[in-house]
Length: 91
Image (cartoon, rainbow, N blue to C red):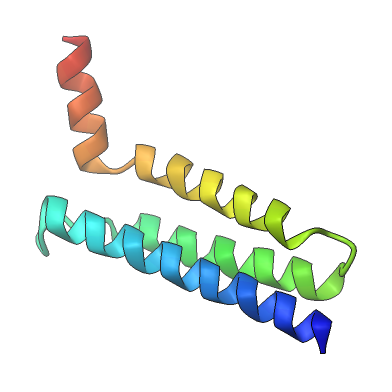
């Protein structure tokens, strides 16, 4: 039961972070420039992390949450609004 609960907590975290990413990108860019590819990469990455938790139970749930949070930040860096902001700051 504890194994299923930890995996469920991780799945809820992945869904909430992915939904937050989608909402933030929608408000920043709108429908016309929404980064569907980055959202797809985030979903596939989340599914991979959840499957790793199911297969290897000795991995801590907090570690996987941290890994997914850093992966989300990395994906968000390569979206158009963030890239344009960085380009403006450098120029």
